[in-house]
Image (cartoon, rainbow, N blue to C red):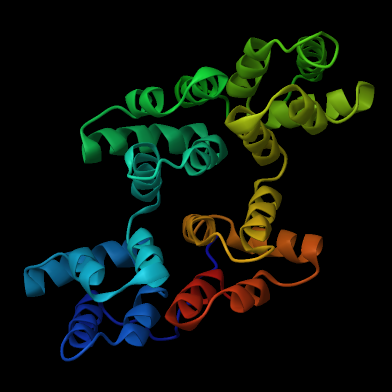
Length: 313
């Protein structure tokens, strides 16, 4: 579900390209026009616009945007110009192989996507970057965190809603035995169940665990640590309620002194055309203020305008 506020009259890709070209000409860039046009175009419109711009002006629109914009506005706009799967592939690539390795970003994207999305990401990753995503995961990660990501990328999971309650209870018992019941932790069992279960099944496992042993989230927190813990919690929370998960991650990115802009940009841009309406509802429910108000108080100028246009009223 998109939260894009589409203006009543949409220009043709040709008109958009002309307006953008004019915004780039002269002294300085008319960033307000650039932000206003691009923030109100969906993935298909952005693809047509980029093609039209190249046909008309013989240069890549993204290259021009890169040279005309700066700071967080540039980061957000360039990320937005991708199609969703290509964007995810790019985020993971930069997070695993960039100058600054960001395992949290790579883990969040991988562990919050559906099997179908991951298959598309894998294909695009290979065609865009000429390498296998699994290889880059192996190079950048270690230990149980690495095993979890590789298992989650490669396991074919059921995406339907049907659940076998008996199986869910059995898996809950296995997790209890592998964690809270024993000295030390049997990480293999956690990886096997979390990477192999459908979202519906894992949510049922969590409910079955709560009925008998208490909170599965608390068990994960007490039995695991670091990026491995973060990956398991991302998988579990997205199985139960992805919108709530992203609402909390957005809150964390803006609370306290300063803002983690990379997280704020990544989540807003990647979720706008998927489930932003639900994220906004969860944010308001949990934190008693709107996501738009939070973004407004933490950002400024064209950067603020761009994010608020994506989030919508």
